[in-house]
Length: 118
Image (tube, rainbow, N blue to C red; front, side):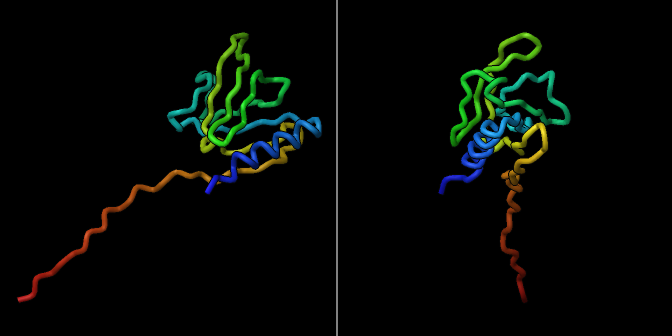
């Protein structure tokens, strides 16, 4: 079954664009596949403006958010796996959505214990 988060990200982004709001995403930078300018990461997170006026070649597909943007005057390619998007919200009023973290807990090796009886 396809994850619902990418569809909600696209829907909220479209609603914000149509409403004249500025779409922002909060990204979990502990995901090793995230490519963002590291100098702007704080507490393993980064907030990115993904409004059409702030990005070039924006892609919002089922697997990732990608675009080009200028940071300190330098054009940078940004890549965020969808599961690293923690939230999408409007900068003007904070309305949006948080997404559940899909980090898996390490499995505990549960081996049966046997007791020998005499």
